[in-house]
Amino acid sequence: MPSPSSARRGEYGFDAPYAVFGLLMAALPPLVAGVIFWRQPWGKLLLAAGVAGSISTALYLHATRRGKFAVWARELAAVGLAGSERVVDLGCGRGAVLTMAAELVPDGAAVGVDLWRSADQSGNRAEVTRANAAAEAVADRVTLVTADLRELPFADGEFDLAVSSLAVHNISDADGRARAVREAARVLRPGGRLVIADMARTSEYAATLRALGFAVTHRRSGWRGWFGGPWTATAFVTARKPSRRVR
Ligand SMILES: C[S@@+](CC[C@H](N)C(=O)[O-])C[C@H]1O[C@@H](n2cnc3c(N)ncnc32)[C@H](O)[C@@H]1O
Image 1 (cartoon, rainbow, N blue to C red):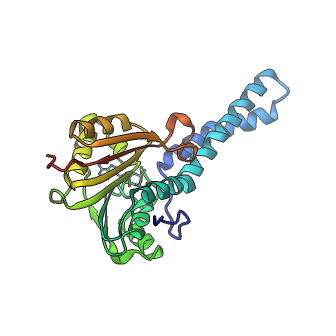
Image 2 (cartoon, helix red, strand yellow):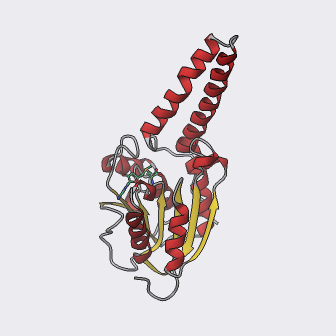
Image 3 (cartoon, rainbow, N blue to C red):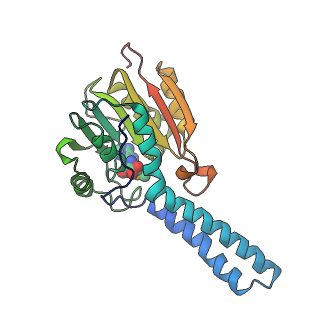
């Protein structure tokens, strides 16, 4: 079964850069104060808080820079693509998952959809994603489309596989997230597959897909997908569209 390489040549930035800043700010002051005042009982408490915060920051940095790629390489390999499929990445950002999927469809197409919000990923711009597709030698099959996940500019059933990594939870309201999941379902062909990874709200996505008649599995990715700790673990929702049409 072909598997994309999790070692990347492109530059994929940091997810939710404000969260990295927040974690560092929560970890460093108590760590420094704890080291200075470690002889005091409250100094030991500060030190413990600083160490816990540093571990959480390290887990986040690992997940966003390395772990995400490793868990997606495994998930994409498990889909078992033949190589000529049309794949859409919903909220592709700088192309971390888009370019990995594109590696697996040398005779197909990989379409990335995004609004390129830099609050959600550092340096998030379509030009950066294009440069990453070139760096990974998949630019010949990658197309980028600027659109909202709640209203996809594609016909029903255009894609064999839809993927989405850490994007749908950024839609603030439950109705909007359900619309995004229903749009993903709509653009899949009957029998097509959907893989959504997120650090929150995945039970909602699974419920929306079950209501549409999809066969759904829902599970956590393991520590490499922990964005700070087990409380923000990446979970995967994988689903297959039934053979009848879904509206
Ligand atoms: C945390 S980034 C993840 C990017 C990429 N999937 C990855 O894993 O590296 C979330 C992405 O979702 C995009 N996004 C958020 N809300 C969106 C919406 N309503 N429509 C389209 N894209 C959206 C952001 O612009 C950002 O690129």
